[in-house]
Image (cartoon, rainbow, N blue to C red; front, side, top):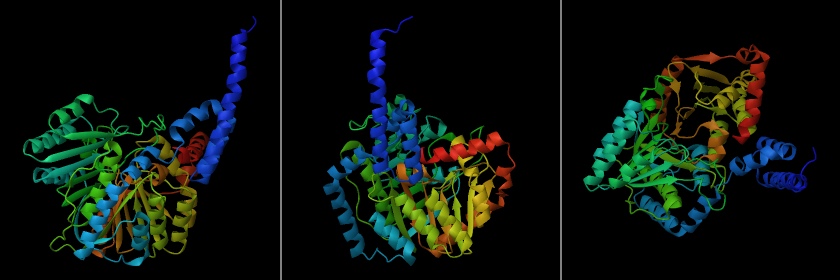
Length: 479
């Protein structure tokens, strides 16, 4: 049977165009790729399998969120005015401090955010403690509440949040809710409509509807932030869902960490929220920007917002500098462990110079690809002296780091390529020995519920499993 001339003509035109698109995309990734591994992986795919790789690159390939950058530039005058006002007010009240050591100074310079003093913080080590504290602060709000989560579910906890926010609006409190459209893809419009009908200002952080790149699905706003009246802020790993209270039949107990802060650092967290809100709405809410010291507050804290719109790879620089600054101890806790070459090299060098390097990961998997990837690091980690543990008393989801005896971080960033370069994240860096001791005690209890993992757990597996692990690691830079 002879082929139809139109079909032949179609393939004569389409095939060269697709391969040409693969070449153009390959050049683009070479000029703009942020990691060697990711660049090589994309180029090989785009040149060898352009029929599949070109559509994937349109969706997942861009590591810079142009829509956010343009919105932030458009709002630079307003946002810079707020930032300048905040810095001047903090300086006039002697709320700025020189961060001890190089870590705080370097990260402060990268983020252009000051280290503030006279703050107070409370560790919240599970979902019940976290949401009891958040809901209590919302009930005490007098002017406004800012709420931002990556995931919000229409379940018992989500309904509880909705009722409380609508109730505060009835009492005259302004409420702003920002959610990530991809993280909340299962959240019903009815839930959002009910919030809006109750007077809550609701907007989705979207990477889907960009006019410049309508297919850019790779960016996520992974921040979890609540700010009340500019006086109290919450940052950490919990989203809004029953599983975060340990009610999931699949995961059971959920081990996570949030932190409540009071003091001038709250305004830095608030500023990060405002950047996200402005990018989504083009508007800035009227908020309190007069930082106040907390009576008895003795903590120095730096808020570190990070994301693909940054001039530098803020999150990567934070972790690399923290690793390099460690002299005695470096404990990292994350649900996902997929470091790139520079981060893994820094970890191995830290262990080789005698630092107690520990990485605590979950025993159970919620994302198979990154879970498999983590096993590929066992041989080189063990050889260098990096100790890896698996947490067995439920699902581990916290994002915490402890450096020596005086530095600790609590935030939303995982230890993987997505958080380092693609997600919008926020981390609080504490440069205070007292708070570091609290984190130490918390993590010691976690390690007591964990087991060390040996390289034999990788080498002893069947070949198909080891192959899957290596393939998962190869795919990690393009996740």
